[in-house]
Image 1 (cartoon, rainbow, N blue to C red):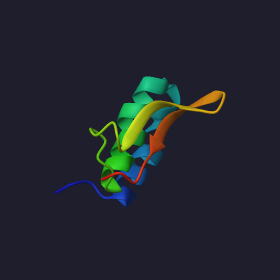
Image 2: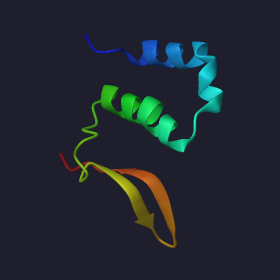
Image 3: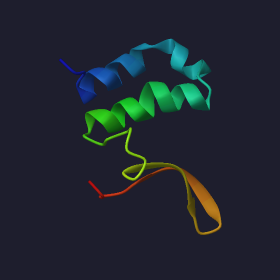
Length: 67
């Protein structure tokens, strides 16, 4: 049975090691897990676009409604 959003949030709150996470660990251990639970296809780069350019900047992930 997949983790629920509530259980993921609780485990993040209870896990003191998250304070020492670098960006890659936060992305893999938190962000992608949450997006997956919320129904986003994290393996589809047309749906969850990593390192997406926006204007003169960049966002870590752009979520599109192309499904």
